[in-house]
Image 1: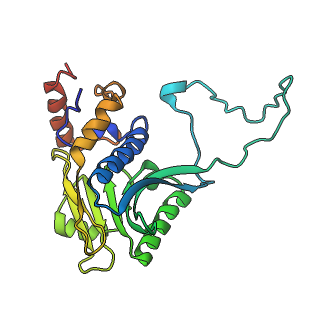
Image 2 (image 1 turned 45 degrees about the vertical axis):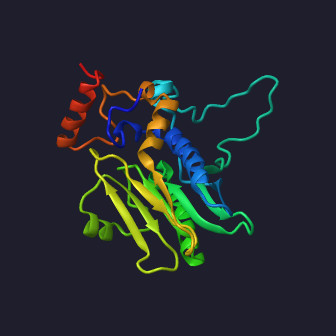
Length: 263
């Protein structure tokens, strides 16, 4: 069952769905990019890893209920027979975030990085945002092309193209794709996407004398929606997170109702 929306489905932006969408979209991007790359290049997934001491992992109310652990267990001594106490509030586990690298097959030289902006990029503690921004800086210093796909309306602006420049050239938008091409002028390119728009097709740059690879984003999102069974996970009877503007909400309800997902 395809998404009821012509482009991005705002009900996929919540914490219940978007992490899975993020991982799956990276995988499907790798597949279509590899199918289109010329000889001598390969797209591989990589993981960025960091530890964020400021990030508190709260229990998912939808899964565990509001009354579970309401006291938090603070101050209560527990002894469990047959087990040895190890410690309390151990260091947080590393956070892993996948992205795509296009490398030259011979020298394993990084040519282009493709990032799908994640929830952690936009709402994690300072370390999470700083880690991503440090990586952006590394790409810029090394002349690596950077493609960023932002399908999240929430949180601060994080893509490498400044927001004021995006608004100056593109006007208002809900989602966008930013492409920074190393070593050329102009170096920044972008396309803005409104809620009612189909997700765009765009080109991923390679080396200067090599034609770019064209990627159509909408079929990949549609494939994610079907394979992930997001129609089951998305609760269209409740407001999406983050909420839509009133006029967008009215439009979205009409779209959902036309598909029989609302009475």
